[in-house]
Image: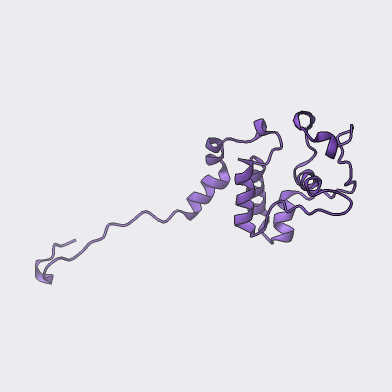
Length: 148
């Protein structure tokens, strides 16, 4: 589900949701974690406690070891400011994506739940083609065509 959220963001914007870089001050994996924190908030303790490399990236207070300056940027703001998405669409798409991007897997929506999300259901209703109209064909000569 997490990967689906990332792919949907990429399909809509043309950019990766998270595109980490390495530097001399910190490893690429820590930058990846920093990007998560900036967008969706701190990594929950329950997740940090399960990590085999937690001590490599986090201090005892749960802060990243090497990257100290983080700049939070909400998903709706990213979509409206960087990608010029209309605010109401950015808000609904953000809510939809946020349900996939919970850092704790147990808090992510299921595929079945996502199919009921207003972003999907309303979008499909708005984009649905009108119902087909019956086609009346005149078969034969004008004089023998049935009257309508």
